[in-house]
Amino acid sequence: MQLKRHKAKLKCAILILLAAFLLLNRGFRSLTKNYLEFRRLSGRKTELEAEKLGLEKNLRAMKAPGQVEYTARKELGFIKPDELEYRFNPPEKNDK
Image (cartoon, rainbow, N blue to C red; front, top):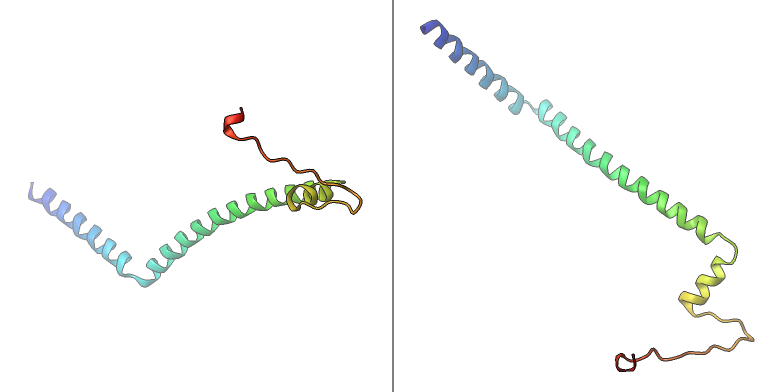
């Protein structure tokens, strides 16, 4: 019975010493820190690749014929020199 108790204490002591060695070891802490940084950067890389694909899709759409003119007219209010622009006030809530 005492032999089992001593073995259990020995195992516990070995585990505590191993944990202390790993946690107090600068190399292990550095390795752990680098691994966590790698995981964070891998996730960021995935996000940036998805954003890049979206931007490339927008760029292809902008290069379509007539798209630049449409965007300039709609968002910037550009008109051709000989065109007239008509503006109407939006309907008020009471007029609906």
